[in-house]
Image (tube, rainbow, N blue to C red; front, side, top):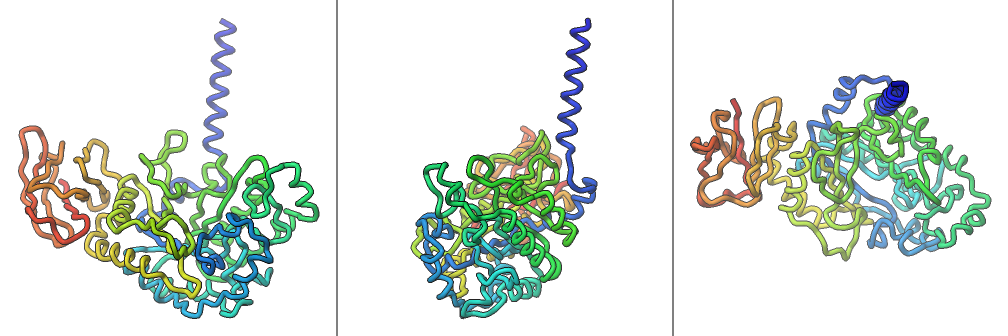
Length: 448
């Protein structure tokens, strides 16, 4: 009996520890307050990512300094020749809005260390190049003018800063771990952290209200960097103090806290189902590129077509997530023609079908998805959207919806679709033989 009692007490203690671990929080914010803070983002679903920096000159990947093991002196030519004379962020903002995007996130500083903003803590910035402008200030003003929410990406990594220690993802990385101590003699991460904090403070105070902060990234383990290297706990506290309503991603390595990031960021892949933590669904956003790289890559050929991109957006929403779709501008400040074509194609579809994306999420439990379709659902309007990835021949059956639908129509033109209930409890919808002239037709069902 004593052994049994001891086992029970031990089990209860373990469960208590588990619960406490799950409830470990940084901020004193209720779940309701969190949902309110994220409400616009959960509604808007679709945003633009912009990766822009010195790597747009070599135009062969934003990690070129790393991949080609470039030294600062070898990379200097890109700084010396950076002159985006055709930069017009108002055009960028108009294209983002026309594509149906509701918010945008731009790289204020990528891993190369070059700043698009006018930081007083470095000369490695746009205002010291031929353009002589704070490119972020113009960008923020332009995107706000179009009614878009604005977000900043800031790299925790800095391959240019003299105090940032060489590690396993640094351009000057080595194969022998014993060499790192010698290479890092004279480098001081405490000084770099001060630099990091000062720059993030500038971004959070000099540009008005900032809606999103994307920090990137942590890589714990041998010769890596984790939350201790960034002092992430104090960093996120500072950010939230300066921008109380901001939404922050999950790359500060604060996974032990429930609120160490507002959303998870599956990169360059589609999730199989709504992500969970400790059995509970969590907010998520997939960041994706038109092709394989984030920065402008002149010779890249693996570009996704419009249907692939639309499926990516629809499928993300169908699993309760957002899509942040990336553009890599050229060194002269333009979106290349391939990016413009994709944005226009998505915009043509979103103009008439955006209602199946904004404010939508996963379909209610119990509603079955027919083959070759994706379902989204708006819980406020009680409308179910059936996206026809492979257009059916004259008829589509929706299992389990018998007696649950008041009205059916094509979304793109609001034209009625006739419904019939089957003996098997399904709802059969007649569709015209000819596929409508939209990339992916959508049936809108108004539920009872």
